Image (tube, rainbow, N blue to C red):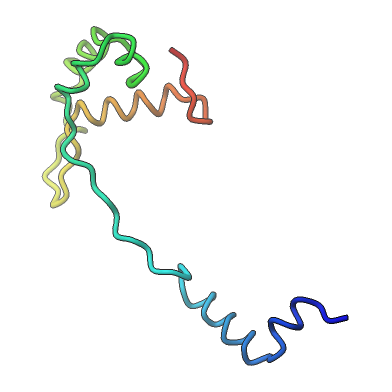
Length: 109
C-alpha cells in the first residue's frame, strides 16, 4: 500500500524543487496590491446616531470632541516626515477602537 506522500513525491528532485520554492518565497502565490480606503470621513462618522457612534469609537461624541480638542495641537501628531501621519481625528478613532477591544474584536458599549 502506497502512502499519499509516496505517490505525490516519488521523485526526490520534485521535493527539493518544492522546498526551494517554499524557502525562497515569502508567499507561494502573488498577493494582490493593498487596497487603500478613501480619505477618512469625520463628517460621516458624526452623522451616525449616538449609539452607532459609540459602537464605532467606543466613546460618546462629546467625549471624542473634548479629547480631540485636548490633543489636536500636540507635537506628537504633527511631523515633517516624507510620509505624513493620518489626521488626528482618525488616529484618535483608531486608538479608541483598539483600546475598546478586549482582544477578540468585540467591544463594550
